[in-house]
Image (tube, rainbow, N blue to C red; front, top):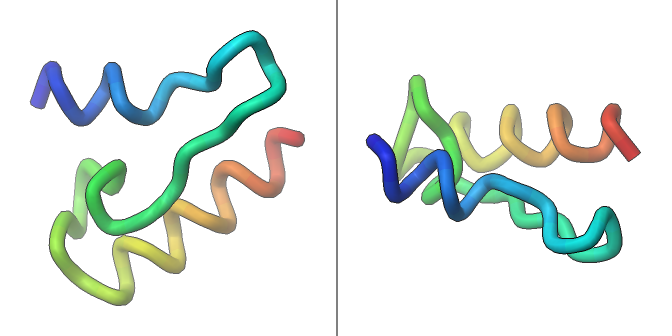
Length: 44
């Protein structure tokens, strides 16, 4: 969703959000939280 995409955006490349709420494919699941965290960590 549009809101999820906004939430997943980094703030000033200093603050990054990850978790099930930012997962586009698996929202509301532990799997989504894990994959979101891996994706954000790989981009830092």
